[in-house]
Image (cartoon, rainbow over all chains, first blue to last red; front, side, top):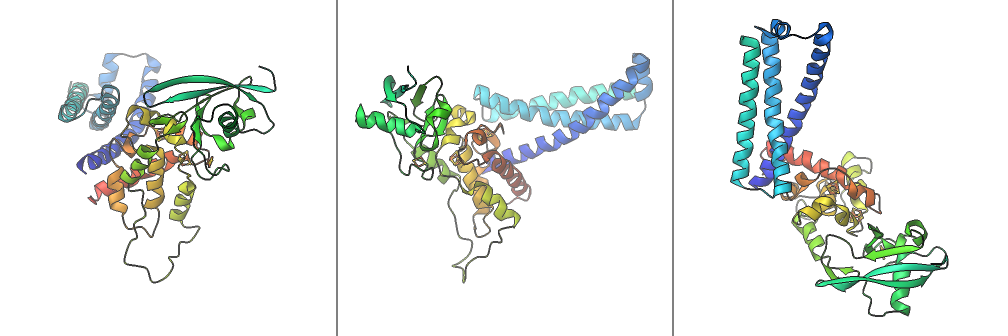
Length: 114
Length: 240
Ligand code: SF4
Ligand code: SF4
Ligand code: FES
């Protein structure tokens, strides 16, 4: 039963990434609310994040959780609404995950290494 | 329609198709929907086909769609569901129609088989009665789903069953959940493997239409969530 096993593990991955996302989104929103108090500027943001290992790790984990969580959800929607199944769907799901991770981590690198 | 007469539309036809036919039925105090259907069959048209057995909410054979919702008709009072004296009675959704209000239940119970919905004794014949403490967590979990009468009301109420005819559905999965919690059962791994997947517990959206409509107030969604947890653990441990 590889498909059952795959579904069970993907379900677990989506649950786990959802838990991480819940935490990340709270921290992210709280930071936004604190940061915009005195007006928001690119320089101010970069001042906080540049060279910061803590922010780099935080947003790297955030991106990872998104890259795990979103493709699994999209895969389920594609399967249910379009009836899309099989290797092409799995490949597309993997591609979305890689694209999200690449774009997200690139942005994190931009914030921290800039 | 006067207070004393019900305006009843009943779906008549077979697998090839059909249409609603209208009947005027005398209203009676504390009359059930099954009483109405029976009255039509006994007094107006003996060729009307429908199914019932116990008439007291035990056998699960009398379910139909009443004014758009799946219900057990023997325990549904007309007064509780009729709108301005009108009733629309159709066969249960999500199952093939045999004739009129009688559905073919085979696909429904086939799903119980596919979900390993049979008790499989754990070891060789036990020497004595198994002792299952009523307060143990597993017994309580099984208790929550054990009163299912197999009426297929939840199966008719589930959108995912309608979209994906292979989906095992709330009743079969609820059955699997009660067995997974039966300490005497020996087929746990096989059952978890049978219910995992996109035609099994992982297809459920947890919107609880099954729970909303179940006449026995069972919550199949909770059992399905339990199956998702247990199958994830089993997959992690490499149990299948
Ligand atoms: S909770 Fe799950 S089983 Fe129940 S009606 Fe919704 S999708 Fe179907
Ligand atoms: S779970 Fe409830 S609605 Fe579903 S078959 Fe059993 S008794 Fe009927
Ligand atoms: S006739 Fe048995 S449950 Fe309704």
